[in-house]
Length: 147
Image (tube, rainbow, N blue to C red; front, side, top):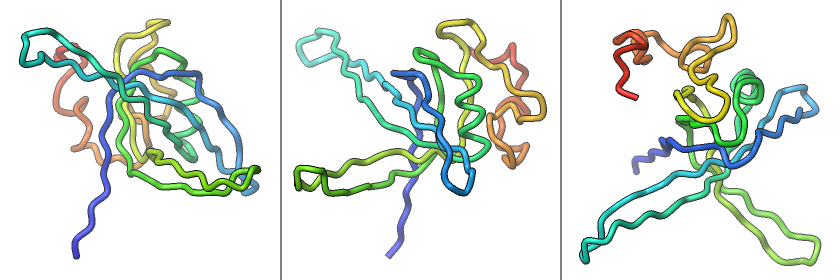
């Protein structure tokens, strides 16, 4: 049986990233992403819904997200869907899905006007180790991006 687990999301941060460290000193950042969907109903009325998604990133990616992003900033993330389950203090079973971020890209816009800036030495795709042919900045100039 074939398996495939890939999530691509573009939205705005719902809160400031929260950075912490594992006992192994690996950085972990948790943040929320709001993804909007707009459509026109059969009655011709414009509609909109928002999906709120919890995200988590590790290592250098986590450090860059924490350093350069804040609530309201737009972000493109690529990752995988993970499922967590636990027993709450009151004995009830709890569970949730979360996106584990494997790649991300800064997007222009949002509060502060710092979109598209990267840390010196970090790739402009926002992560290290991304092949050059995958980054749109290698194919077009920053002025060619339509947004």
